[in-house]
Amino acid sequence: MSKLATMLGLILGLIMIGSGIYDFESQQLIDAFFNPQALAIVLGGSLAALLINYPFKQVLCVFHGFVKTLRDEPVTPDELIDDLVSYSHTAKNKGVLALEKELEMVGNRFLRFAMTEMLIYRDKDQLKQKLISRLLQTRLRHQTCQEAFENLATYAPAFGMLGTVMGLIMMMTVQVGGGDSSPYGSDSTELLGGLLTGMGLALVTTFYGVLFANLLFLPIAGKLRILSDAEMLQNEMIIEAVMAIKQQESTLLVRERLLSYLNDYLEEEIIEKAVNQSTT
Image 1 (spheres, rainbow, N blue to C red):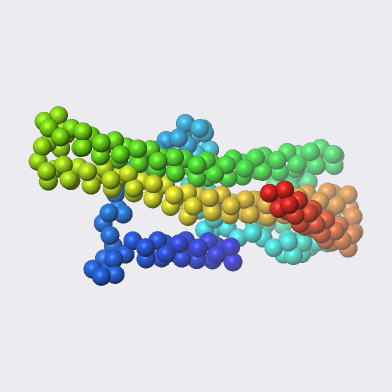
Image 2 (image 1 turned 90 degrees about the vertical axis):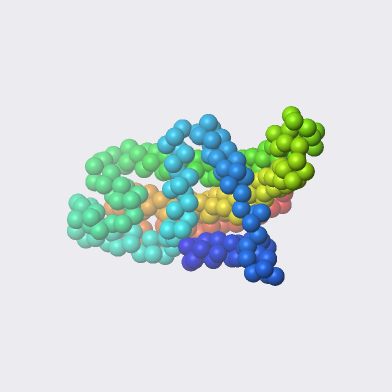
């Protein structure tokens, strides 16, 4: 349902914006809202600032993050628990090495990595350290991508204001120039055209900046945070289950540990959100 909600949100937002820029009398979109110069200033400037702020590889996560919000669905804990209990049952009855045959059918990349490392490492402490290290790397990568979209949401309105200033400067040039020094000449029609051009650039760039920041960049950052939290939860549950399988714990105990871990995790999340709401 996460993908569906994202698509519905984008479609609804575009419909609302489209209804605002549609002239129902002439039955056509208002041309003033489509300004390539303003679009280049907002999007081009935001992308340029992002390239200055981040290495090129991290900038690519912006495109990956946008696709991820339209493609990925958070895995429900119940499905993951059933899979982990099934692997525990196989390891308990046939031995841990029997899980090697299951690796090709494991779709979860972190689970496949954890099971592979479980077969490689004999020492449980080294195994847990390796899995936690991989978990932290994934969390850091997710936070970097979320931060990139949050920065884009800051850059876009800023470059919108920059376009507004540029448009005002163009308008002042038209008014002050007046004579031969004016880039628009002395003809009143040209002066009026230059004035309207500057005014259009001044207003539309602000419109683009606010639109992209609030309809795309901030919502995508929020959706990526939700997907990341769900992935971190399932990865931590995988570590808990893999360590239990490594120690040859019973299948029933593995299920109980995962359910207990899930309940404790959700309780901590509820308390944390309540504290954050009370402090804001």
